Image (cartoon, rainbow, N blue to C red; front, side):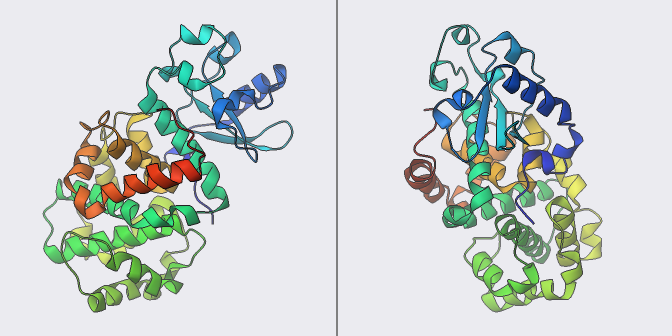
Length: 328
């Protein structure tokens, strides 16, 4: 199994990307485009096409709100993002070579650019994101568990069990090729370092994580189906009657007002690179601070380790892995 791309997720699959890809291929072929639409984000192994609406052909392309992957006419892996809503349309009428010259809403543009670059990088390896795995898993735990608490009053045991289920799911997002039942010790080590809502000793934690070995038949899937199964494994039947993924999603509605709105949240829950970009966008800037998700992350910032997360992303990952390429 591999890390899901946006349009491979449960929410993403609801969009028919064929007309989008066909239109992009037609535009690329018609204009003999090579690497000029990558602007300052050229990656080499993957062709990048950043749509700004700089000409009539680009203006007429279908709208798409997430990075879309496809094979170009040379059968090379390619990805496109649509930045038309976030550029100054007067500026793109003139010749430009760098996006920073025409971007109007840098925060929204950066979210899509970072999502795209993380999707490209993690297709090869997730090793360089392992230092922030705990921060991202904690973010996911608090986003989902806080949402549950808005619709149900759980006792402390059920809260811990729910957070363990979410944390196991977060581990799976970073390690899609691993069998969870074979990783009980590693998962225990990861969760033991998290600051959950209530403390839990390592022995009890290991016993709970060991439940995975008894439900191996429910773990050979990815995305929302896996999350649903983990919630069923860890929560008693009476709690499951109230706490279900559909109910959680309804609470997350309108939780973020950046690109693609709530759909980006749903996609991020299944696509780890988009989740990293989402958490970064809500913690690195005040632009989205009034969103429901940003409020949760700010409330739990010490438990999540937001400062350490930002320090690594800004001081190491973006500079080292992305070559410092970002619209500041």
